[in-house]
View 1 (tube, rainbow, N blue to C red):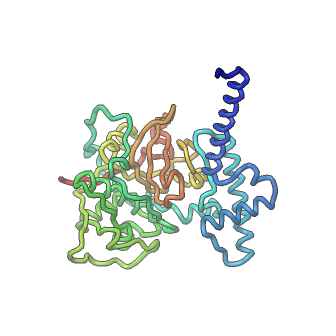
View 2 (cartoon, rainbow, N blue to C red):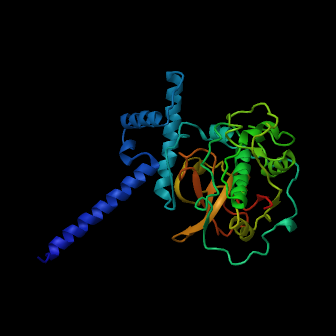
View 3 (cartoon, rainbow, N blue to C red):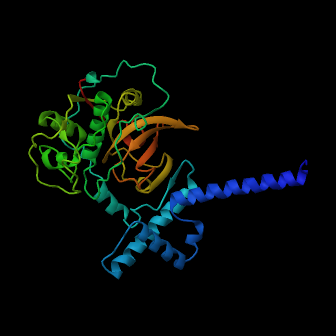
Length: 351
């Protein structure tokens, strides 16, 4: 039986409504709240209690809980106002929603760029002559990226960035994806790097070379704090590298050339408030280029009209897109978004 025009219109309208509803529901699940939660104080309190339960938050007393609720409200206001203004990315109520921005910066960053200059001459850049780059690369799909890790409230991002890059080149050269120890760097690489108080990836690469390699994560597990350096244990496997190279500064083409061949350690400014609550999408929010956080570039690609770099963070899998952020590239700025083109480097390993 042929459908009438009215029936066709009704079915089309109903289908569109379902599509819009499902899209909205998906957005609510990403950001962690709905507009209805903002209509009165009782609903805000219920949202806070639900958020506490989800993230297993426990406070010492009622005064601390009330203080954290006020911080939570202020963060939620920023998240909602931003989500109403931007369309390429979303902010969400993640586990950092009860931290003021100053508290967050003090606890979760840790790159130190004020150390003595360590970067090598760009003449040592091994991918200078690379041509015909692929349109996209994702080292996660190639099996060269371990699970997202969590540095916790220890400024050890530099160690996680270093280790992820070493894990990547080791898998590319040997075929074995081995999770390696950040704790060994925190405890033992103390000539220039400073444990939970910050460090720099190039110094860490040099330490791994001179130290004869890194232990596995299982053999030297992460403590989320500084510990005592353990001497090399006999009969336990270590992963070695040959050296490291720096990507020419403020050169996105060179960064992509290197990234097409292996994951990279990169430095960014992650102290912006939008970065704290990033939840999904291609990030192009406000940030400066004062580098304060070490992360790992693990690929690049495009989405609609936005080109991006895939970045692995070390704030656990609940942050961002399961622990990752897509950062916009081709911004027209030589330093790149959040300074991502300023200080990139990578380990080398002989076959």
